[in-house]
Length: 427
Image (cartoon, rainbow, N blue to C red; front, side, top):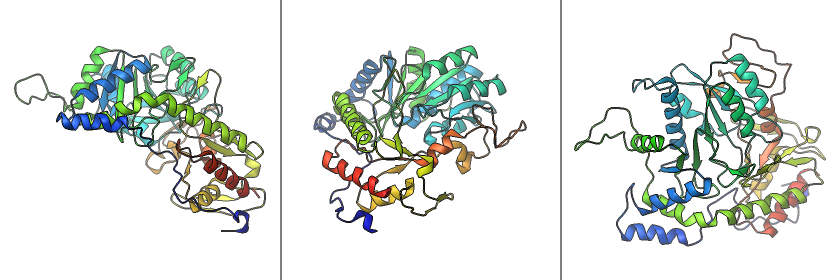
């Protein structure tokens, strides 16, 4: 380690990006399930967790599932069936159909489109929310007016401009699958995320604002869709005395043990959000004199502040080159880059992460179409390619951004040290 970091001691206990925060109630409900022998995919914890989630979001129904990805898959399958009708089991409900999808997200948002035989068309990001750009979405509909499904993800706990996206969708008769996996408890114009989609999902993965160690939920206002998801998640078993199956199903139900953890976590959601907000605001104040900016919070938006992120000013980036799996950078006085900061944090036993690598840059989706505000298409399009017209906002945020340690058990002293480390990276 170079002399810039002299005097800083390595954290004895790791400072995590985002780890589960337990309160004791979780053990109570898990123990209750074990003592009552409800160690299965049915039970009181599941019922109560579904009730708590639907009440928080303001929807009529919630279905506990094994993961947020499972919920996304079933939401996208339902959307495909509603739009195009049932398909053979080995085909998928979106066979050959294009689906507009957020570009800057985890690939769990996108993969279920491929599960159902569809083709994701990636929509560029906007700078003021880091979410799907409504202007790029308009351009995508100009090019592909027949698309009928949009999958929208909210990045790092901050909602996007979902009212504008909904208006565009309605103009084209398109359905919305709302991926609120990272934004449970966040609101847009006073309405909870998870309320805006024709089909909406949340996640209880181990690093989320509320965790079950795993698990997720599908939420809806449609009783029919609720029953359909329950059926599909239990191998699509028919109501018969024997095991009768007339369509493809999945083993996607939530465990009553996992639901016990979720049930115990739910009373602490607002406490977790308040803690995450304090972390964000302390970073914003502590880094204000550096050539960086925090992940943005648009007007009329109240995030859950799941992760605090920064993006480095372009003229403050040191040379920084990434291949598919490796990265090289060269330190320069007064400049830094995401990899340098992450490497230094790791050397002091603190965990940060790169920004999600955009889907259009991923090897498995590199040939898919990517649409910016200027309508630039990349990949296997026969339309046109013009690399010099529009900025690739997603790629730019990925190039210059990083996620900071945002664990709500991080002390103010630990955060002050992290802020000091980041300052020294720019010396």
